[in-house]
Length: 323
Ligand SMILES: Cc1cc2nc3c(=O)[nH]c(=O)nc-3n(C[C@H](O)[C@H](O)[C@H](O)COP(=O)(O)OP(=O)(O)OC[C@H]3O[C@@H](n4cnc5c(N)ncnc54)[C@H](O)[C@@H]3O)c2cc1C
Figure: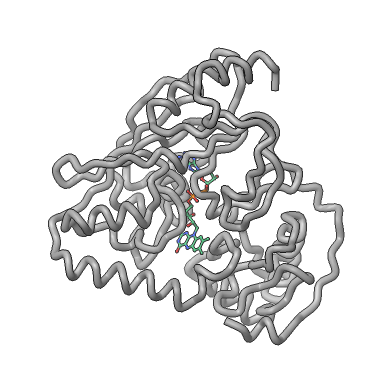
């Protein structure tokens, strides 16, 4: 990146909102990935729009947007150019029954805020890792509900810095599909529909969801959730296909297919991103060879992956049977 762009950003925004050569691993649930050349940390939606406007003035594109990094695998080589980390933009308020939140608010907090206001509709977000912006982008789905089903509107920042409001059409959302994918705009705020409900019933549903996730040990492993999309209604879910291929516990020295959920690829904290990527490709190849189904990624690969390093794979039944 040109030195004058960096200087302009540092002059306009607080020092701790603009960082150079910043490790990105701490901003992901995998805790993997190299350095971001320049990383910007807006603290509210208006500051985000000002940052994008400034970048646009210099014709500097954004390379990557990160919420909580709960669905990404970032390359060991890091991300050149500008990465935006939105987790500190987390203001929210109710306007009637609508929860209006900056995109960096955590999904779990949104559910809790709704519960505290005795409003139902967001219980499915309890325990879901990630921000509301990331959940809207991914159309995150849990317990038979998805974000597209409760989104009233979203505020978007276009690459020029212009802010516009998007009103959804239900057809825009589908399984792992949202209108924000493939668009250059960044989700800066969301408005979520809620209804008046009984606080105890809402609390109980949220606790059921969190307990189910704890039961699978989701909070104890380094993962990005499901790495593959489910292939379609005529096929078994991706996790079942992987399990049926006997791949639980299969992996490298430091990364393997998780016993409690075969669609998770987890690691022990010593793996490289390249290792996770190699295992992802190997599992995909084996499932294709054995079932004829070519699984599509749910995880978003960010940055450059050479796929040249080779890793030795083996099956470890002990870690395969461990939950
Ligand atoms: C243990 C575990 C369990 C999970 N369970 C589920 C589950 O049950 N259901 C489910 O659907 N997912 C699940 N996931 C995946 C993850 O929780 C969701 O995809 C979540 O919505 C990701 O949010 P995030 O803020 O972390 O997004 P990130 O991982 O930071 O980003 C994901 C993608 O969205 C883009 N993005 C993020 N924020 C914005 C924004 N504001 N504007 C534009 N683009 C943006 C990023 O560039 C990236 O392409 C799980 C993950 C983990 C680790």
